[in-house]
Amino acid sequence: MALRAHTTDTGRFTEHLWDRTKILRGAIDELEFLRRLGDGTLPLDVFRTYVEQDSLYLAGYSKVLALLSAKSPDAQTAQFWAGSAATAVAVESGLHDELLSDSRLPAREGEPEPSAACLGYVSYLIATAATASYAVGAAAALPCFWIYAEVGRGLAASAAEVLAADPDHPYAQWVSTYGAPEFQESAATARSLVDVAADAASDRDRAAMATAFTVATRYELMFWDTALHPQPWPSA
Image 1: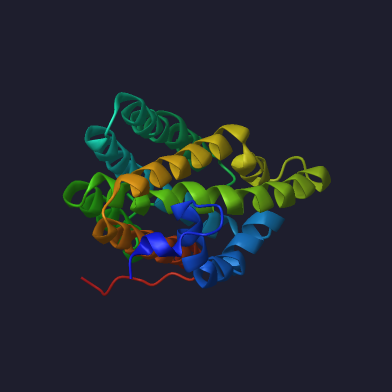
Image 2: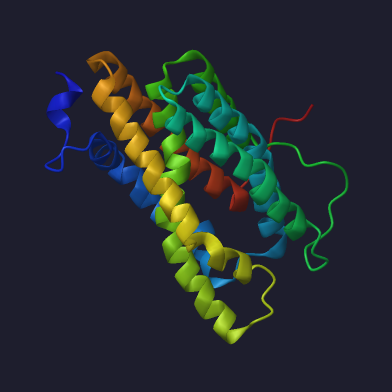
């Protein structure tokens, strides 16, 4: 059956994607890692691990966004993806470097190694953006925008309460920026672009878009969870 029959009453294809991943998103909402990140009880060594992995992820994700820019159907769309890639490199990576230089975080010897979840997620996104259609690549990239924005609103509210009690908390100020209007707007734009791509896509591509969005949502869950509950690589 064609996925065009599965859009919701709003007529937006992304609503179908959101409904399709309801169970996965519920599992994300219940993650111990996110709860403790928001209420300020996450151990500092776990927070450092998360920031390191997020920095490694962003280095790869910026390439995904650049690929989407190159494949975009028009200049305005290309400008959005290219601008998002630049932000990931210049702004967010700079913020990660600043966090990792905080003396309150435990020191680490040597360079961090990508976790299995991080490497798998980045590799999947790059491969999809490079080898699949623009529409499918955009659908794969969307969870990082949309789910992050939704989770971020709750985390920002929790972190604000932490800061009210402890203005010098080592990472609550950073977490409180998760609900920044700029990121919320970017997530809304990315969602709209996926809707536009779906409207122009074939039924086959729309099915592939739904699969890509689901796989990326699984990786979102795994990425956050393994920061607190790591799954070490087999010994070399």
